[in-house]
Structures are given as structure tokens and as C-alpha cells.
Image 1: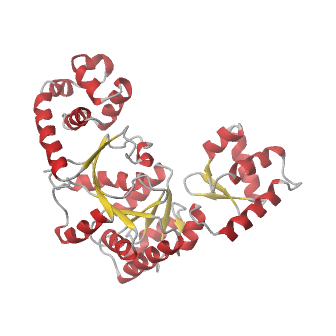
Image 2 (image 1 turned 120 degrees about the vertical axis):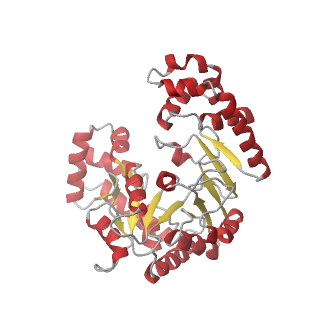
Image 3 (image 1 turned 120 degrees about the horizontal axis):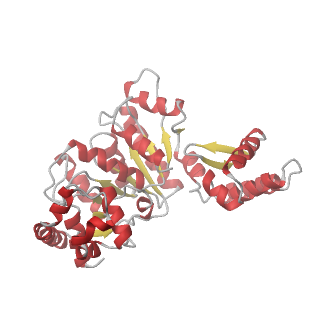
Length: 376
């Protein structure tokens, strides 16, 4: 992304009454922030729903550009990368989400499009049990999937414990912030954040000098959910930011996992509820997690899986349509039903019946988020 495009994008994010949804619409229609600026006098035609306040705000665009120039200089000095939606380094998983930020600020060394990315979230009131879970899971994750990238929010409790566990194990870890990169909140985590820049990174959608605001922490949860393949809830009460993140992850069709806990423990109640309501898969160890996610390179496991698939594909008790579904599932670890419908050219209604039949026969297993996989 050129400096000019970056400046215009920065400026647009400051315009009053320009919602993220409408900004996406304008970019989709005109192709770039520069084009939006060039057509600023005709935006009512491009976006009929544009409010008078927004159109008046575009009249002050020069003021927003001045602030953007200051921010761009801050980014240059701080070695901060500005990632627009069309940049190759922009997190492609997040780009697929309809409310993705149009611009991200990133300081770090980790590849935000790494092959294996997991977000770990949970309560700020972490218990010793939660700390043990963070350490043991990340330690074992390093053994099973040594290139995994761990994402969290650098908050008190579960977040910072996951980051520190990753740093200890030599895994890259990225913190998603709810403010600009000119500060670290909470301040007690500055040293951890400094280490993360060298072994992972810090990511945010907010410019410098952004006021610490509770709403921004809720907003940043969608980034935590969107940049990863799966979200793990380590500990949570029945209400909290981590449950919001889990809900967002489900809406993005990400796999959600939760560690179970004792039924009377406050900060396991949220996890137990997610599992009970089938909103999260039960998680006990990193090996099972990686197997279910398809992240393992266990040759023996792949051999056994392949043999099992061949037996299923050529079994006499499967119809031609069922075999088509099994063949499609054999190509990946799991698939969403809408993807299966496209690949098999079978209508969703009929496909749902076929999948139910295959579940009853023990050939297919349903997962959270409308995904299906071959039963191993």
C-alpha cells in the first residue's frame, strides 16, 4: 500500500458517522481510499444512505489528512507497519470477516498468515488451575505443532499467561491491543510486550493517542477471533469478554474449544456452559487439539486415517451420493456444509439428510460451526 493510500485510509477512519460497514461499501464500490477522496463530492450517488453528518465531515478531510500525516510519521519512527485490506501481509483469515478493520497497525516479526494460528482467551481473574492449563497446553503445543502462533489480548489473567507461556516455549505470540501502539495497557505488561515484539508482535486497529475505552476492548475481540483458526477459552465465568470472543468466533465459523472445570468453580462455569450447550468442543490436551484441527504431522496417524477412508469410500452400504460426500471430506480435515454442497453439487437440504445418515452409520462426525469430518 502506498503512503498516499495509507494516508487517505487513516483519514477516512476518523470521519464522523462513517461506519465500518459503509467504509467497506465505499471501498468495494470505488476500489481504494484514494478513489473515495477523489470522488468525495459525489459520494451521495455512490452511497445513497450517506448521512448529512458524514458528507459534512468529508468537507473537513484536510484536517483528517493532517492527523494522518502525523500518524504516518509516528509509524515510520516506531517501525510500525500499516496493513490495508489489500496488502499481502494483512491477515487473510480476518479479511474474510465482514467487519474486518480496513487498516491495521502492526509492530513485530511474526507472519500474521502463519499456517497454524490459535487464539487463547479467558478471565482476568485467573486461578492456579488456569495458569497450569496455559503452561501445560502451550508447552505441549510446542511439541506437537512447533510452528503454531499464539494470539491473545495482553490483558491481565489468561491473556498474559498465555503470552508468557509462549515466550517461554519459544513460540511466537501476538497481542491484539485496544489502543494505539504508543502505549501498553496494562502498564505492568510492558516488559512482556517488549519481548513479544521480538518473538511475535503487537497488533491494533487504533491510532496513537487513542483514549483507553471499555468499548474498544469489546471491539478488539473480533480481531482476536478473526485472525485465528480456532479460539480456546481457558477459564471464564458465565459472563465476560472471552465468551463474547467465543460467540464472535462461532459467527466467523471458527472452531471454539474450552477447558472443562469443576462444576462449582466460578471461573470454569462459563467453559462448562459452552461445552454443555455444544458451543465449544471439550479440550483436555494439545495433542487431541492438533489432531482435530489437522495440524499434526503424525505419519502413523495419517496412514491409519487414509486406510480408514479407503474402507469407508468403497463400502457396499454407502450410496453414490454418500460416497461423494465421503470423498469430499477425505480431501481435508473438516469442511463446512456449504463448502460440501458446492464440491458435491448436492442441495443443502439433501446434503443435510445424507450427513445425518452418515453420522448414524458412524462414518462422519459433526463439529461446532456447521463443520463435518470423517470419523477416525
